[in-house]
Image (cartoon, rainbow, N blue to C red; front, side):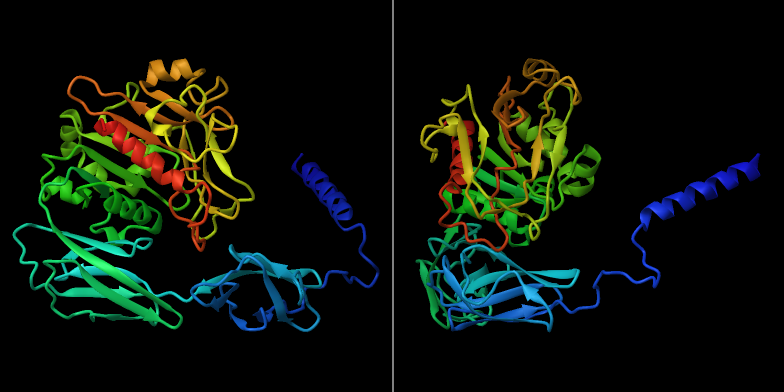
Length: 467
C-alpha cells in the first residue's frame, strides 16, 4: 500500500512541476533579468540642494534653509546605475513637504528610496538643571519650563543642554546661572537661530500629572514625549512622573485631580498578556493607583493605556479592548486623505467642543490631513454577533460598564468613558487610530486638523476635572 501511495505522490509532483514551468525553453534559460544594479547615485533639487544618499537605509536627505518652501521643488539632477531607470526624471516638480519615494528599476529588480527634506534647524533638544531637573520644551513657543522642589536654591543652577546637530548655544551648557527670573538662551546653526526662554518654577504638589513607564520625560518614546510635553506646557501645575515614582511615593499626589497615561508600543498589542509584559511598572504600581482612583482621582487613558481601566477595576467584566493593532513609527502609513472618527449622538459631549470641523460634517472629528504619517495604533471594541463577545452597543454597555462616545467606520467603539461612582473618579478612554501625536519625519505644524488632537485632550482633562 505504501508503494502505491509513493508512486501516486511522485505522479502528482511531476504534474505540478509541468504546470509550474510550462514556458521553459530547450536551452533552460529565463527571461528574468536579476543582475542589474539599482542604485540612486545622485539627486539635486532646484539647481542648488544636493541629496545625501544612504544606501543602507535607502534614504536621501536634502538640506535646505530654515525657512524654505518645499511644496513644489524641481528635480534638476538625478543619476542612477548604468542601465537602470528612475520613476522620477529631471524636470519633474514634486511636493517635498512630505517624504517622496523614488523607485530605481533595472530589469526585473528595483529599490525604493525615500527622499526627506531637512531644514536647517537650531533647537534645544534637552535641558536639565543640576543634572537632576529636566525642562519641558515647547518648540513652537520656544519656551522651557523647569519645575523643581521649593527647597532648591534656584539662584545658582547649572544647565546641561543638548542641541540639534552642529548648533551652538549661549549662555553655554555647564555655566552656573541665576534662574530667579526667566533666562534667554540663543541657539544658532547656519541659516537658523532661535531664542528660548527658560523659566524655573518651584512646586511641590502637582494638580495634574502625565504618568509614564520611563524614569524621565526625555526617556519617553517620541509619540509619548510629544503628548507629555504638550501637557506640561498647557495644563496648569502639571508634572511628569513615572509609575515607579507613584509606587515609591516620591511625589505628593494629594492635590492631583487628573492623571493622563498615553501608551504607545511600536507594532501594537492585542491582548492583556502583552500589555502586562510591555508595562510592568504600571502593573507593579497597581495598589497605589487603585487607591488614588478609588479615592477620587480621574484618569485619561489613551491608546494602549486603555487596557489599564480593567486593571483598575473600572470595568464590570474585566475585559480590555478586543480589536487592536498598530504599525511602527518609521514605517507608518502616509495618508492620502483626512482621517476621522464618528461622534453621532454625542455631538454635544464636552469632549467634542470647539474643534475644527469639516464644513457640513457635524458627526465627524478629523485629526490629521493628507501627508500625515500615522501608525494607526488602535485599541477599540468590535461590536457584532460575529465575534468579540458584544452583539450590540447596549450589550457592551450592560456587560462591560462603559459609555460609548465615538465610533469607527465599521461601528467599533473607539472613544468611551467610565463614569464616577461613589468615591471613585471618572475615566475617559480614547483608542482611535486617529488619535496620534507624533508623525515620524513629518512637519504637522500646518496640518488643518492635527490641532484637534490637543483640543480633544484638553477637553477631556477639563471634563474630568469639572472645569
